[in-house]
Length: 424
Ligand SMILES: *[C@@H]1O[C@H](CO)[C@@H](O)[C@H](O)[C@H]1NC(C)=O
Ligand SMILES: *[C@@H]1O[C@H](CO)[C@@H](O)[C@H](O)[C@H]1NC(C)=O
Ligand SMILES: *[C@@H]1O[C@H](CO)[C@@H](O)[C@H](O)[C@H]1NC(C)=O
Ligand SMILES: *[C@@H]1O[C@H](CO)[C@@H](O)[C@H](O)[C@H]1NC(C)=O
Ligand SMILES: *[C@@H]1O[C@H](CO)[C@@H](O)[C@H](O)[C@H]1NC(C)=O
Ligand SMILES: *[C@@H]1O[C@H](CO)[C@@H](O)[C@H](O)[C@H]1NC(C)=O
Ligand SMILES: *[C@@H]1O[C@H](CO)[C@@H](O)[C@H](O)[C@H]1NC(C)=O
Image 1: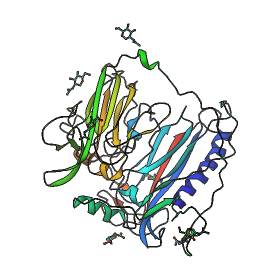
Image 2: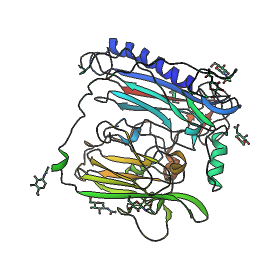
Image 3: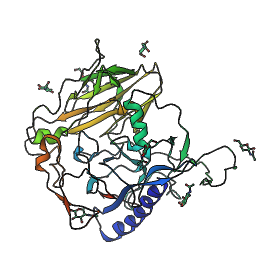
């Protein structure tokens, strides 16, 4: 994890120089990330974690970058409702514009509970020289990722959830892939650690884009999403919003629309908590283009929950909002971003157990693809559309091609391409 983060960070800076100097207008920066598993011992116990070194096995993969807006292009969002998973041993390039989105972000795997194995890291977007900031140029960026860590591997954790068990207390906390962290400097021998000296500073923030006067907004759609503790649905322990536990889509929403696939999803997600027994379904929200939606998140679960909606900044540049048990929060979004956007709890176990849905936003008057970018030419096909997928040259064994890539492999490449508005 730390290694991955470091590599991305270095390449980002290389990208900055090349991009900044070689193109005047819209510089493009490319970042290549290789995901694979290695054995490491961040808490002193050897286990399988994500890294960028060739080794072991892997499985299909997707990566999302929460908080980056992906204007008009949910095609690049990297969740199962928008993208087919990248088969193991294949590469795939996400292309997206990060204009007007200066800030700190992260990338994170979204399939098969892989987030629990690491594989996430920082992603910093800074300004181009021609764009003034309302504060002094920062001396630098420090990427710090902090999270619970289990010494069980991600497949073992997933198996626990599938068997209806709680994950229990994490075995420790990792900071940038290292641990254990204590309030003093006594770290046992053989445990990797880092010391960071931080002088806190403050500065004005850039104005959020498109701010509205909240009091004068006429809300057109209200959704109350209530989470409750996991319950049994068809003999399995599942988590839900409004009594719907989301069943993974086989065919991404907009790909299904484009190819007129029927029954890939249902547009009947209830906009209020429902009575009656919860069910597992492929229910998504039929949202109104250019509506002002008020989304009220009610946490009736017993744990603190964080919610995230892809495709937007939530509130003033916020990407995620936290809600205490028994509490609620409301977010207001102007639904001008056409596509299918994931709304989910960030709590990994609850998300895995079905606490998510999508908002499908369509501009009924757009017949010329002005409000949504066309399907990218490298789109992967799966589910009902799996027969359209062309074989790709396997990365592991040059010469062989793979169509049904569900085999053991060594490594996988995913390239991030972006039109990046860059720094000094
Ligand atoms: C500590 O980090 C080094 C270099 O990244 C690595 O080779 C070593 O295996 C790590 N040790 C543990 C206990 O994780
Ligand atoms: C990714 O795959 C494409 C198509 O098979 C190939 O042209 C490209 O060179 C590959 N890129 C990397 C970085 O392996
Ligand atoms: C993950 O952990 C389980 C249970 O400890 C073990 O059986 C399995 O081999 C591990 N998988 C890998 C790839 O290390
Ligand atoms: C640091 O903390 C550990 C326990 O967390 C304790 O055993 C040790 O004495 C502490 N060392 C110092 C120098 O305070
Ligand atoms: C909200 O609706 C009221 C009454 O229809 C109207 O006067 C007002 O201009 C609307 N506000 C906005 C921001 O559209
Ligand atoms: C979705 O909403 C639009 C109006 O925004 C409506 O015309 C359409 O019938 C709805 N579709 C379904 C399946 O409810
Ligand atoms: C659920 O949340 C609502 C809104 O905060 C609250 O009124 C209600 O008492 C909660 N019910 C339970 C069972 O927690």
